[in-house]
Image 1: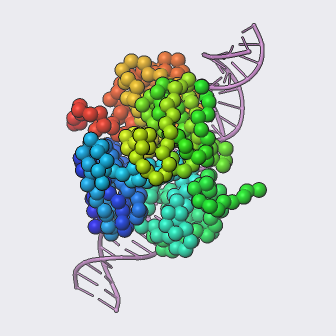
Image 2: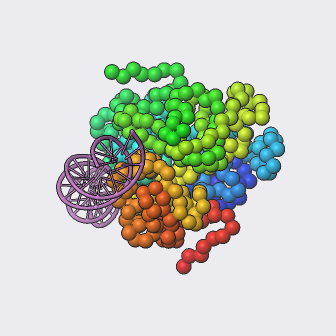
Image 3: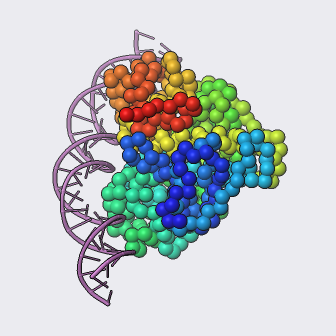
Amino acid sequence: LKGDVIYNESEPTRFWYEVVEGVVRTCRFHSDGHRQLTGFFYPGDVFGLDDGRHSEAAEAVTEATILRHQRQSANGGGGPEACPENALRRALASARRSIFLFGRRTAEERVAAFLLMLAERTDSLGSCALPMSRTDIADHIGLTIHTVSRTICELARRRLVALEGAHAFRVLDPAGLRELAGDPDVEEAGGDFLIFG
Amino acid sequence: LKGDVIYNESEPTRFWYEVVEGVVRTCRFHSDGHRQLTGFFYPGDVFGLDDGRHSEAAEAVTEATILRHQRQSANGGGGPEACPENALRRALASARRSIFLFGRRTAEERVAAFLLMLAERTDSLGSCALPMSRTDIADHIGLTIHTVSRTICELARRRLVALEGAHAFRVLDPAGLRELAGDPDVEEAGGDFLIFG
DNA sequence: CGAACAATTGAATCCTTTCAAAGGGAGTGG
DNA sequence: CCACTCCCTTTGAAAGGATTCAATTGTTCG
């Protein structure tokens, strides 16, 4: 399913989806030919919860297994698969993450925040996969692939992360990366927290 | 209630809210002192639907009347006020709007998209209020107040919009503004659509 | 009327983009 | 198995745009 389209923009929303395995991206194509990636979705994430018609397309970034849920009709009958509150909450959380990401202004902040988010969403320790291309990252955080590439290499040069090929990395200095990202998102890391000077 | 805090970051989420009258903003304060406005909410919009603890603060932009809804406990019992699917959907729609807004890259695109969104959310025709300060706009779309001011004045100079004081405007050339914004959001305007050459 | 704050405008700097090109990895075909 | 090609990534240099610094104007409120 790699690179495959799961649904297209403007399609009626008959289903909603849940990632079982792999990574999915949602895309919006602007009239100037520019592509905006509104989100990346990992196992456990849900997507495709628009009303009426999809406002974005969804594509598989890697080989992916997707759970497709039937929707109830608009009467909100609370049937077994009627977009459970749970799913909506998770979708909202995904959207919020993206919004926070976009709040960063400089290239360095955005890239640092993006890598941190990836590391936190997967396993944080050890090697973290970077399944999407540089172009994907650029279209997601609103930069060019050149700036993305430059910035990632710069972070590696400063030993904040280590690149393991072009599609995997390791966080070497979480604290330094968080500082660069501007906001540590410490409050979301349930349980443990840091103390600053 | 103007400028008042409705709830703070990290507060437990015991309620969720609905705007009856006025305008509300949700804010996130970064460690570098920088402020990010994650959303503006108009009558009919809902906000404060985080899980567990609020990840952002909410403040009144104007005098505002807010409906405060009690939450059910986490058992999801489906009680009368248990974050109805409806509310979550609207919150998700709000978040999505913000994400699309941030997808714009240049100052002109962002300001044009922001003004358009405002005009569409209120009445589109006639004078449209701009209740928030330039600083608010800047912190929302990720620019400085200087660039925001410059760009708005530039749009007015080109007769795309007309400024009526600093806190109200009128859309003079909707088509031109949409073209600047990059993506017309035409598909969301239910029913009518445009044909391009 | 004066003070304080918000908005506008100008000039210089810095950063990102654009333009251009070289290096590297994966897959194909010989 | 190796060579070739294609595409993605990385890097360099120049151009454009947003930010920063600085100052003026306008508005609101006491």
